[in-house]
Structures are given as structure tokens and as C-alpha cells.
Amino acid sequence: MARVRYGARTEAEIAAARTASAQLPDIWSTGVAALWETDPDALAAVLPPPLKPTGRPLVRVNISKVDLPGYPLGAGSFAVSASHADVDGWYPLVMPMTHERALTGGREVFGEPKKLGEVTVEREGLVVHAWMARHGIAFVEVRGAVGEELPLPEPSRKTDFYFKFLPAVDGSGFDADPVLVHCLRNEKVRRLERVTGDVVLRESMYDPVADLPVRRLLEITLGEKTSDQRGRVVERVAAEALLPYIHQRYDDPRQILDAPPEGSH
Image (cartoon, rainbow, N blue to C red; front, side, top):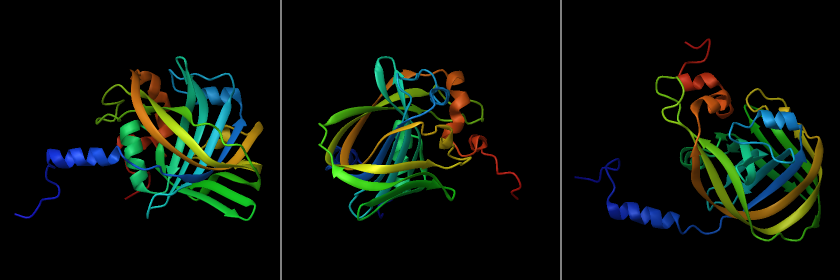
């Protein structure tokens, strides 16, 4: 009988897949990063417990083109500063990706809030233009002039916070208590340039980042970076604490009830 591809894989095949994924080469990306101070009350309002605000109400946007061999990827992130216990890090609200492949592992393994979208980084001479768009709306746009090269930072470790959960089969709550994930990233930079420009946040009912306005723009940079990531579950979260924030993950919260859109036939 011919190989049935949906059949069980052998232990050797599973081991080989794990070995291959553990030996991935550095994957470099070229991207624009913007950092600003926002309204502290607005930032505090988007943090599900047990996350808390840090000493500064910061927003960080990354818009990158990832150099995957034969499979270029646009990857974006809109994150706010947050702390958990004695760890300061970032809580991403939306992470648009241009390919389904990039969504699957991030959402199912780490609980990342990834969604399909448009992510573009363009440079023409000294002008750089980057944006993230969904549903025809470029809800974040960064444009500026590239200036001098900056000193390369030392390799660093950054922490992102994610909530991993599955909506309940009966449409009420979750199938099990959600978990809070600390995702640790070791980042290296091989090129970094200053950008003088601005950040535009556009109104979108699907990605309402405009609620976190640019009160004071701190920096925009254009860089070439690579990073790895390792996640760990640090605690279980009470369902009633996270349920008021579940709409952050979905364009329409009714999606979790598996109902058709209004007016559909």
C-alpha cells in the first residue's frame, strides 16, 4: 500500500523533525521600529490581569520584512509596555503576518495575537516607508528620512507576554483555564540607522490602535536584526479575569460562538 500521508509518523520521523527545528540558522529581518509615550490610562486599560503598567507608558511598533529563503514574510507587532511580578516586558495587542504559516505556530504554541494582514517595508534612497494594514486600512504607518548609522547595541534579551487559551466548545468561557506565557527573545543587531519621521495611527474598528496615541515620539530606527524565542508557562489565569479582554484576539467577538455574520444567507 502507498504511504498514507495523514497516517501516523514514525518515532524516527518525529525525532528528525525536532532535530531540524532545533538547528535553524539565524533568520535576519529588515525593519522599522518606533517607540513612543502614550496616554497612561489608555495603556492600563488594555492590560489583562495579572499584567500591570510599568513606570513609563510606552508603545513599541515593529514592521519588518523577514528574509525566509524562498518565502519572504512581512511581520508586524504593536505592543505596549507591561510588567508581571518582577519582570518588565511587552504585551502585543496585534501581530499582523502576511502568511498563514507564520500564524500557526505563534498562535497555537505561544498564544501570540497573530492575524493575517499586509505588512510592508519600502526604502527608496533615504526615504523609508512602512505600514501594517488589515481590511483595507493602514492602521499604523511610519514614514521618514534615514539618517546616520547608530552604534550597534549588545545582544539583548526581551520578554513578551502572551495569553494562551481556547474558547469553550459550548461558546461559554474557555475549555480550560488560560495560561500566561513569558516568551524570551535573544536579539542580535548587525545594522542600525536613525530615522527622522513620524507615526500615523488610523482609525479601525478591527485594530483600534488609535486609542493609544503618540504623546511623545522617542525614536524611529531602521535595522537588521535576528532573534530566537523560547516560551514558558508561568501561571494559570482565572477565566473571569481574561474574558473581558477576549475581543482583543478576534475581529468580531461573536466568532468564538461560531455564528454567521448578520445578514448572511
